[in-house]
Image (cartoon, rainbow, N blue to C red; front, side, top):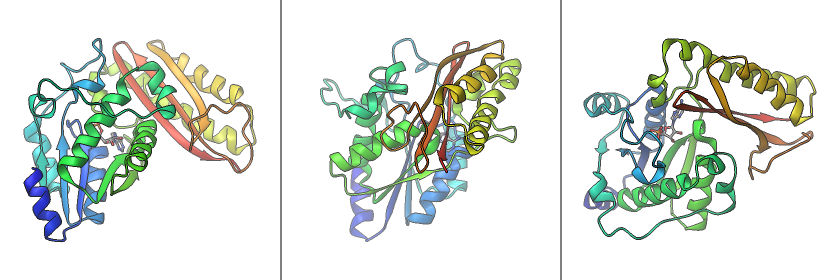
Length: 275
Ligand code: AMP
């Protein structure tokens, strides 16, 4: 892969990379299409990265379907599929990690310690292997996007990060490879996540400025679902991810949440400009 990447670079091709864990849905494919618009050669990577999963999480049962993914990636414009093995990526004895500070201590980082260290380590490795000019990530993982931007800047990676909007099912549920874990009943209840975010947007547009009132309403809507267990509902500054208690005009805030349905943990978010 590294040699291929060198050849593309030498041939003055603009290289775009889309790092993923596979089991593609329209969200992933939208990233591939965007990468294709911004580059000549698109490398899509599929790697279920063990270092970003905690021992109790779903690493071993994470859904996988490489044949289907290969077909879909190609149809969306991907030129090369890079599917390394765990042994290749973490050759024993593996000893080096990339860790971003501040931004990783809140939200997902609080709920999943070590998660972002795994993400930034593997993304840094993918950048070094594929040598892209452009890398595309999804707003679905808002904090991940912020953390990767920070790492790219701090580590002087010479590439542009592009963040693609969240792709949703017709009823509003943010697409995720993990949605397949939901039972039919949980799937129905899960609509409350996006519905509550739309409600938060409406409250802010109508002039509500107290974060607790907004998050309280979101929690009530989600809490009304019998199987939902809320991890967090948060309103933070979009740029720093610092919690905001009182919204002010001109702020851009990230309303984000994580909710468990049994063993399935879903996240969603919306970015709102406060008028
Ligand atoms: P994953 O395979 O879940 O690690 O996701 C790979 C990339 O796809 C990440 O940059 C995600 O943020 C992005 N992604 C996942 N779901 C969506 C979605 N519904 N809409 C847009 N991007 C997404």
